Length: 74
Image 1: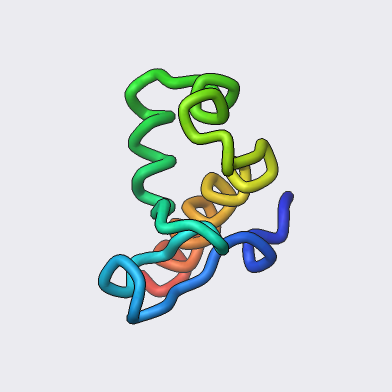
Image 2: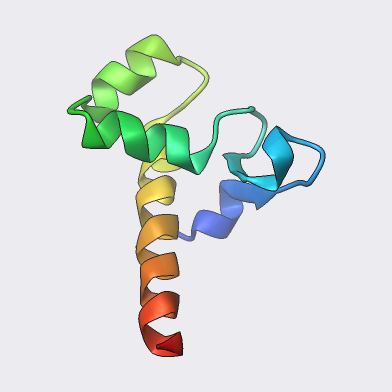
């Protein structure tokens, strides 16, 4: 599993404190939404060349970790 902490940050000054890909204003939600709507990793990179495959996979890892933490808390 990718260590998403190398790629994802939360900064209250950027995008209202939503988790973003470091060095961009692209949120984890944006990436997950694109994937959920059928875009491939390669298509996302074509549209947003500032992103790379590891950053996109880090978004998936972040979402999986968050889901895991929610299940533990329940």
